[in-house]
Image (cartoon, rainbow, N blue to C red; front, side, top):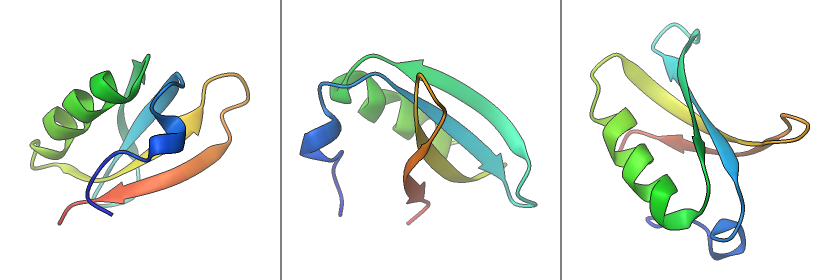
Length: 69
């Protein structure tokens, strides 16, 4: 998949960024898919970031992952 999932475009999510050793490096709260796409681009542009996870705002549950191409 190369675009933000349609079913999540209207949802607030936390994008949690992980480094190459699997440690949390950053996190960003996004309010919708358009904001998420911008944040994803910015986070993945950082060389230390290897993986992003989208997580539910309320409970922190894992929703999906985004890996560098």
